[in-house]
Amino acid sequence: MISWLDHRLQFPALSKALQEPNGLLAAGGDLSPRRVLAAYASGIFPWFMPDEPILWWSPNPRMVLFPDELHIPKSLDKVLRNRSYEVRFDTVFNEVMQGCAAPRDGEAATWISAEICASYGALHRAGWAHSAECWIDGELAGGLYGIAIGKMFYGESMFTRKPDASKIAFVHLVRYLQQQGFGLIDCQMRTDHLARFGAREILRDEFMERLKRLIQAPHLAGPWSYQHRVDG
Image (tube, rainbow, N blue to C red):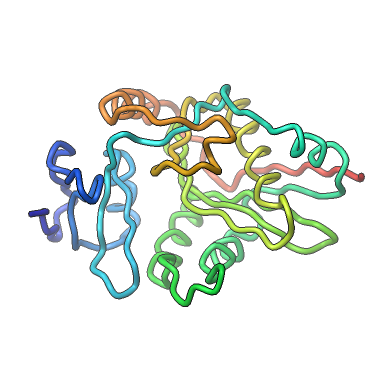
């Protein structure tokens, strides 16, 4: 059985997370900015479908990317150098969230509900949530969003409307995080897509040891000012 949360900003010990489904820890509570930040600082994230209660997760192992381990495939490296595009951060956060929320591959539902958008929109306005945006031919072509606490970044979701657009935004974000001294990017669950960029799984204990240290570092509040243009 998993715990049901009440009004208190407390979560069960991570050791109580289920093995199947991997990492399910608790249900209930709310998506107030205070609770969401408390969750991330504790190695926990919300993920649930609109017809479900709020579900909180902490999988073991955890998929992460160390910024200095970023791998860029040769084909993408050519795109980064030769294609015309522009990357910006934090200029259209809500539009990026809507792009991530749009159904994909004929799917009728998305886990990024209006409630999620409202919560992360509030976190963006408060300087905690950030978007990386790829613009092609003057239009938003793809991007991603996530949360930053101290020198820890938590990736949430990405979308693309044109080939490679989200990948371009992702690479620029990782390079920026590396320059700013961020030590870890949380990718949550394993995907082959992220593995191709150098992401790998580590045990939850190691993840938490690193997280606890990184979130104590000085916070780089948003909006983040970044703009990079390539005229291919």
